[in-house]
Image (cartoon, rainbow, N blue to C red; front, top):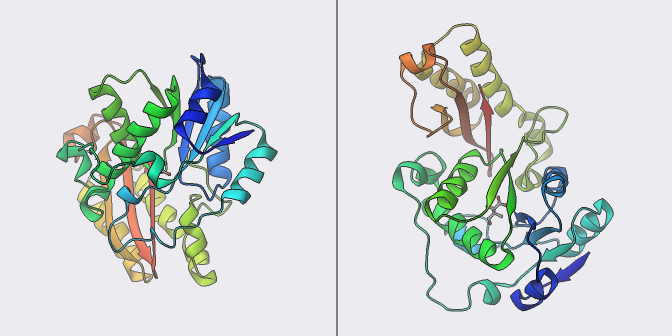
Length: 280
Ligand code: PAF
């Protein structure tokens, strides 16, 4: 695997390549990331990964400074998995060379709801860096995990609206044996919190079961799941049953008509904020 830190070196490595498959990450790689790279490999050649902790998508009180930066460890994992041909690991000056940066602003009805409501500017920051990375790598396909469900939708929407010639592929959420979705932020959990963490998925699965059993009152299901977690000491930001196609609230008619739905959740356990979702 080649490790490059500049756009010039990246372009040198990729000259003439028309089938690049790309996996952007913020590093601290786990099995979930490695699964994205495996999928990328099935859909393009060469596979390019990036590692860049993007300041623009962190709020002022979020974990930008303490976000784990484990480049050598990540390189070792990628070398071992043998799916990635080039790793692009730029520094901030390389991706944001000027103090005032152009920004991509997602439409409010997608970017300012759910995660966007609790993390103002988050999807603008994600969209901006993904657009820059796409411009550097010029991939034909790019792979994102469904764990960040709304992020995946924002990026698909951006590609469509900017007519970017990139196909976006989604990988199913990779979970630990007890159901906890893999995330770099799981490492912040204390042992007791780690034991409790799968309950987020339990709460989503219970919504799924009840919907399948014919309970069509989404508000009731959201409230019940929220009360369940809050009662166990979580601090729920949101648990929301939404239409998969636009993340709008489904009407009772939508639900009765079998509209594809997804339940999305974000909640804090101690100091750690976890997100998860489940297609219903
Ligand atoms: O999902 C992530 O790791 C990040 O949001 C991404 C897409 C790499 C952009 O920084």
